[in-house]
Image 1 (cartoon, rainbow, N blue to C red):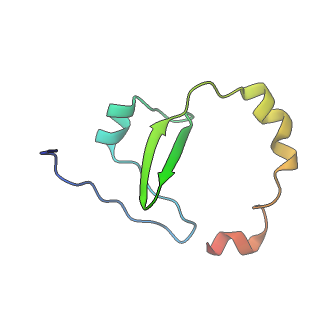
Image 2: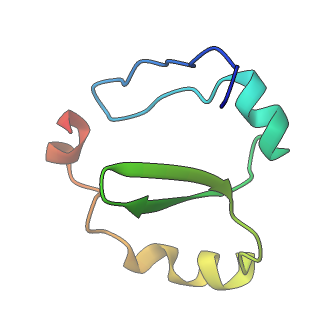
Length: 75
């Protein structure tokens, strides 16, 4: 059984939230790091993403316009 106090953060109008410092510490994440979400049924696990090819990500960035419209700010 986990004896830790549950952690809660608020979601902004844009769907953003702050990862609590204790979670960042456990995951050893810092600004600029990537995280991944693993979903199974109604449970989501957040993990530090390893092995991102930054050169590849930069190369395809301009093709990722699906979520760049003004209507996406209200999600």
